Amino acid sequence: MIIGVPLKLYDPKWGSKLANTILELEKLRVKKLEGPVPKKIFFQLKNIFQMFESLGSARIEGNNTTLAEYVERIIENPSRHTTDEGMKEIFNIERAIEFIEETVNKSAVFNRALLSEIHKKIVNGLTPPPQGEGSRYPGALRPINVRINNALHLPPETVKVPEYFDELLDFVNKSVDAQYHLLAIALSHHRMAWIHPFDNGNGRVVRLFTYALLIKQGFQVKSGRILNPTAIFCMDRNKYYQMLSLADSGEEEKVLEWCLYVLEGLRTEVEKIDKLLDLDYTVNFVLLPMLSFALDREHITKREYEILTAIVKQKDMSIKSADLEKIIGQESPVQRSRILKKLKDKNMLVPFTEKGRIYTIGFVNNYLLRGIAHVLEKNGFVPEFLNKKNV
Image 1: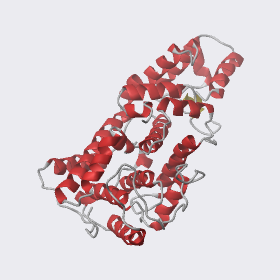
Image 2 (image 1 turned 135 degrees about the vertical axis):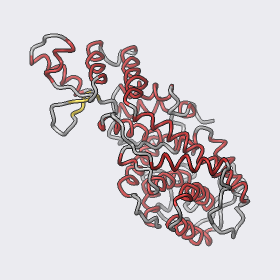
Image 3 (image 1 turned 30 degrees about the vertical axis):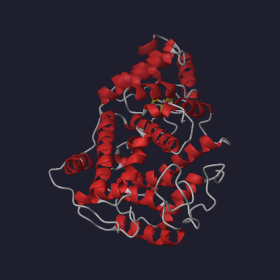
Image 4 (image 1 turned 180 degrees about the vertical axis):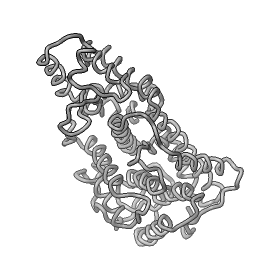
C-alpha cells in the first residue's frame, strides 16, 4: 500500500465474480439457522472448531504443533494450564476467541481498548521476541519500527501508526450499506496487517479482528453458527502472504483481487461448516465414524461403543439410566449406575443440565476427540497443513 493512500471502500463491478460472491455471502449471512442437531452436540462441535481456529492461526505464524499433537495435549491436559510456550500460544488464542464472542455483537464499537485487550490475551505469558511469540509492549501500539520476515512490505514508521490505526477504527465503525459490509471486512484485514500496529502478534490479532468483524456483521456464532475463518488463510499459507502482498500496492484492481480471495474463501468455509446443522450429516458422517474410529483403536470398549452409538442414533441424542436395559439387556440398577459412572468419569457422557440425570455423548477433552479430529480432517473441514510440520 502506498503511504498516504486513504482507506476507502471500492465499488465492485456488479455482475463481476466479486459482486456475485458478495451476494452469495449475503444470503448465507441472513439465512435462518434452524437444524435438528441438539444444542449440546452443536456447541461441542463449535468448541472443537475454536480449537482448530486457534491452532491454525498459530501455525500460520510458525508454531510447529501439529493437530495430532494438539489433540493429545488437550486429552492429557483439559485445564489448558501449561509451561510449554507453543501450547500456551494456542490456548491464548482460544481465550481471545472466547473474549470476542462474549464481547462483540452487532452494536459493538471497535476501539483501541478492544484491540488492546485482544493483543494482551494472545501474548499473555509468552516470551517476547526474538526468542518467543510474546510482546515487549502488551496491548500498546508499537513504539518501535518493525520488519516483517520474508516480506517486501515495510510497515509504516512508529510515528504514523496511531494515525493509521485510528483511521482503520473509524473505517470499521462507519455505517455503510449492507452490500459493503463484507468488502469492508476484507479491506480491514489487509489494512491491519499493513499497519502492523503491535511489536509482535500482528498476524494473530488481525485474524481475530476479522472474526470479530464477521460477528458484528451478522454471522452470529452465539445463535448457532460455526465459523472457522482462519481455514481460509491456512489452507495455503504461501497464497495468503502472496495475496496480502498483492494488495500492498494500493492499486484498485489488486486490492479487489485480495477481497475476492478472502470472500470466496469465507463463502466456501461457511457453506461447508453449515452442513453440520444437518442431523443426518452430523450423525452419519461425523459422530458414527468417530465412534468406529475409537472402537477400532480400542479407545472405547464394545459395550461403550454400543451405548454411545445408541445415543447418537436417538433423535435427541439423550439417555438415562433406565434406557440402558434396552441397549445392553437386563442389568441391575447398581450395574447400570456403574456403567454410566464409568462413561461419565471418562467425560464421554455429559448431562444436558448441571447435575441433571439425562445425558448425551461428550467428545471434547477425551479420547473421542482423536476420532473427531480424524473424521473432520478426512471430510475436508480441517486443512491438511495442520498435520504437517512447518519447514
